[in-house]
Image 1 (cartoon, one colour):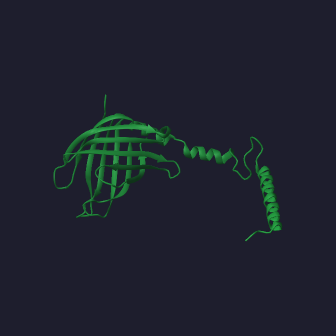
Image 2 (image 1 turned 30 degrees about the vertical axis):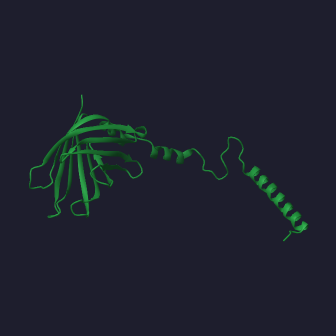
Length: 212
């Protein structure tokens, strides 16, 4: 079927007019050089100041630097509260990232005769006003997320989170307490619930010492 010439002419006029109108609207929308687009939020004032404060590292981030460097650690773990703990040792390397907003740590050692590797990321959330931590290791497939508070200038930190107990397959909470005796030595204690009694028990204790 052929399109009549009058229809072709009308279509051409409409397309030309549409293109011209679009170009004119684009010119009108284009802001003057150095000016923000229409409707864009103003850059400055109290809003910008609040945003910069919320996204910048502050006093609560300073003690994260204590984890930066190289450490050795000795570990004791209680698989059964009524039995003596198993003992192991290893190393930890920590470094600050993202302009001091977080510290990443890499832990290496042995667990039950097998090579162990774990990675942690710790920081302070200015908006939530709490410390946050994530943990992964080669003994599982999940990510442990913990939140908490630090006292005494960051020397004592209490964190808690939830994980799936590999022995029962059910959710179970984890609580940890990290205590810095000085800038080169710390103790980390981890607690969980005894599946049989439901009582909180000490699962692990780690003593870390900065390498000289």
